[in-house]
Length: 439
Image 1 (tube, helix red, strand yellow):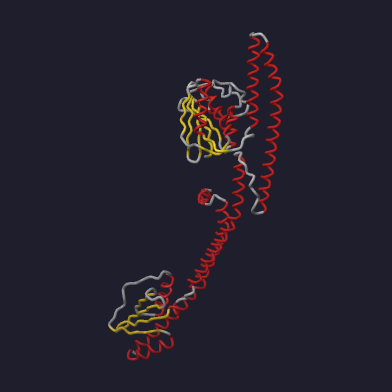
Image 2 (image 1 turned 90 degrees about the vertical axis):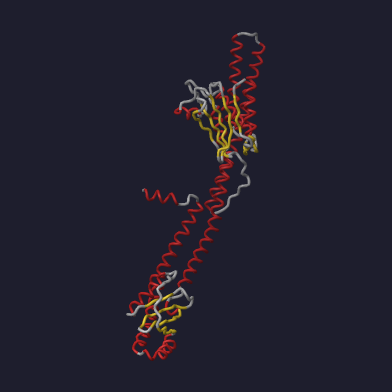
């Protein structure tokens, strides 16, 4: 289990990386297996046979020279004409002590093993000094016999060509895979972006299905879903507009009749109830209407926070501080955002004497926070506070003056813009409501 978890940590997280891994990894493993088999079964075997043949020729020439030292010229001529070996006698010379190793150590290892099996004398060789030749030296009684051998006689020289072909084929397949996978992933990414934009209430009319059949099916399903949701929202808005008109008419008549009545405690109570009914009606309509009726555009949150603060000071005379960074602008709907922040401020205003409205950028998000010094909401009751029509009966009722929709409207607006609302403990001792939006 730990091993699997450790491996997953290093695996690609995106579809493009995983698809590329699925295609490239088997190809790479196959190429490695083929290369290993080639070098193990063919290349090293052929190289060993060639090295053994040259080692046998070197051993024979060395033995002939030691048996007939005076015939060196004839032996050297015969070795060159029949075996392709260039032989030179260096009288009084000694074997070098320095040794240079080839890039492919298997070459030196194979030649050393072959010479050790064929020669009883000390020897030395160099496979790196000359690109086309191998220098082999054997110690004899009166000096050193130096053999210059064509490299092709000692090693199979096609190994590097095979490696180049393997690397080129793998690179080509990887490049083709990247091109095709990118073309397949692009429609999926466009579908995800369109769904995210639609979730924020932005127009995605230009989105067109593309890609593989399954991706196009998902895209068509998304378009159908979008059309159904738009029709549902339009029907809901039209229905609520009619309900609003039908209810406002009798409420207006009632208000007119109460205005013509003589002043009394019953009349004042009736007017108060009527005002609460109108306020509840407005809140119901605002919650159900959602984002309808306004196109998204740039919203200056800095100016919006200052405007809300001034309105609260002017209407309620509340002690509210504004701490908003400059230049906080995002794409959204100004009216719903203003109502959401106003709801958070009004909730704090109902139970606190001091309020701090702040706005700042946090990494890739913009956070608007409302802190207060009120009684707060217990952590285990904060989820309930977001439920529509919910009223908290303890010391703090987040929606006491309304019908329980203030936080619900704020969260609905935040999520429509790709964000959310969360409740935390405030440094002022009360509640901290944070409206978090993607920048």
